[in-house]
Length: 73
Image 1: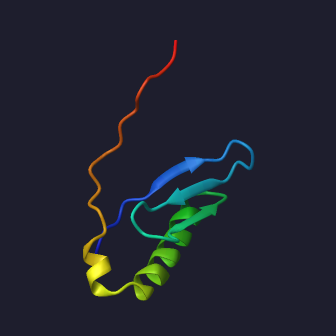
Image 2: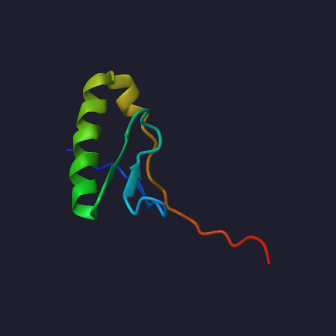
Image 3: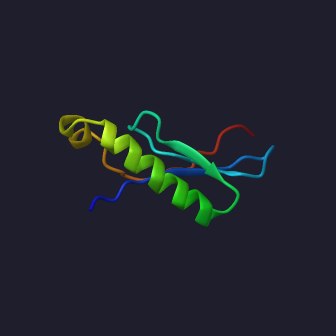
């Protein structure tokens, strides 16, 4: 079993949670709740990984962290 990090935002226009997995083309989805988003992300990741060859799977970047950068005045 592999753990993969997802980036999650809340869309201000729709109010939906949006999940994106950097490094895996097509690995993005949304949900009304964080629980729904997690289920949807798991499903889309399983589908994406099925389509990838083993070499591509080994090249998925490792999650390092997130930084908040303050800009402007």
